[in-house]
Each structure stands twice: as C-alpha cells, then as structure tokens.
Length: 319
Image 1 (cartoon, rainbow, N blue to C red):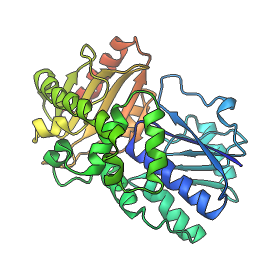
Image 2: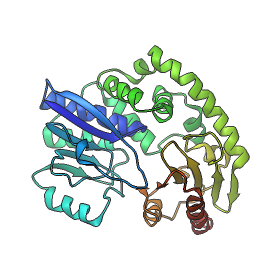
Image 3: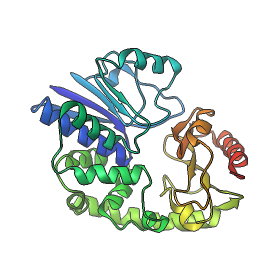
Image 4: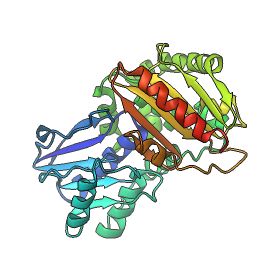
C-alpha cells in the first residue's frame, strides 16, 4: 500500500499536518503502508499535475483543493483553498461520503486533522499533543509577544526556522517522519538538525538587521522590499518586533521559484486590524487567512510585485 501525501512545504503546520495525518492513517487504516511525501509551494502558475497522484491512497494536507478523481483525502483550513470556482463547486458536490474536509475556522490544519480524527473516527494520537499544540500556536500566531516569536526560545520555534530555511524538501520530509513519533526537543537535538540550525540562526539575526535598515512605516503599515537582498524567507514577526505600534506589514521578496508579496497583520497591534488580508490578496491571484496572506508572481516579475505591494500599502495605511 503506497500512500502519497502532498503537503505545504517549508511550513511548520504543513509538516505537522503531514506527520499527524500519516500517523493517523498508519494506526487506524493501513499499518503496513509506505508513506511518500511531496512538498507543495504556492506559485504564480499553480497546477496539480496528474503525476502527483500516484499512490494507492492520495492525500493533500494544508494545501489547496484538487478535483483530481484520484484524490482520496483532503484537509485544509485556508480561506483561499480553491484555485477556481469550479473547484469549489466540485468540492461541494463531492464532500458528503468522501474524506474531504475543509474548515477555515481552524487556526492550524494540524489541529483540524486531529479534531476530525477524534470526532469522526475516534482516533487519538498518543504523544502528539505537543505537536498539535505548537502547530496551533505557530500557524495561528498565538505567541505571547513579538519578542517571543523572534527570539526562538522553544524547540518548536527552532524547528520552524529549519523547516522554513532548509533547501529542497529532503530535510523537511525527514522531519515529518520523525514528527510521527519523536518529541520536538528530540528532533531539534539530532546532530543533523543542530548543524543546520546554527547557520540559519545566524542568517535570522542578519535578516533582523536588513529589515531594520530597509523598512519604512507608512501610517499603520510597515513596508520593505528585500528583493535585492540575498534573503529567501524571514521570520514574519520581525516587523512587529521592530515596529510594535504597527498594524500591518507588506513586503516584497524573491525566492528560488517566485517573487512574493507578503501581507500580514500584527497579532499585538494597538488597534484591531479591520481588513481581511486573504480577500485583498485574492484580488491579485493570491490568498491566505484573514490575518495573513501572500501573492506569488513569476520570479523575474519584481515590478508587478512592487506595484501590487504599493497599492496594498495605500489601502491598508489608514486601517
């Protein structure tokens, strides 16, 4: 039995979702299954190729819906879960009687999967309570403060840095397999992870300096453009650590496969954010959650990304 799991790559919640789901299926349905993983990333030209669904069982967790007939399980909690209105309609027609689950009311997909596993299937993953709790904290931005979010004191936060910053998907998929049974502290102290963490932490410290130099506060919005810096990814709470009075952040960055506009809201803002950021990003082909979203452009399309970012700053700056 081959189980293919498509998950949101380089994301703590995506990794934890894949780990919890795999443990659930192995314990409850397929004890001898061979689990294989595919990391998915949001791109300007998002497609689900048929070749992705090559398992006897095929699942997507913490990522967009696919109408592929070979899809067996789906869990997602993002407002922007459907690529097209046709996909949304396909889900509505197929959800009853199939293992397709969607609820944007959950802060994390891991907690969503755990809730469905317990409520619908009577399954509880002993030993994974910490994993579920931290996925909810990290994906739901439930940290006590911006300082706590940036200083990376807990094992889960150190592991998040490795998951988000490691190259390729090999390390993330090792972590997924470890997460099925090991504690987060045990994983962080594996020699391979410790070796990766040190340079990534040094880069994290440099990114704080870069953002501090680049960022401008425009009304309620912190804006910065690091597309010219060698900075693939950064801790999304740094702007609020540097500008605690801000409400939103808008940034432009470049990764190996896309140019990205990131839009976020300050969990500790002095005023309640009024805008739904997923809805704003959807107008540009992106999406996310009400409090955080993103838009993907082709890697070389920096100017369009900057134009979109500037328009969003204007919309948000007066909250």
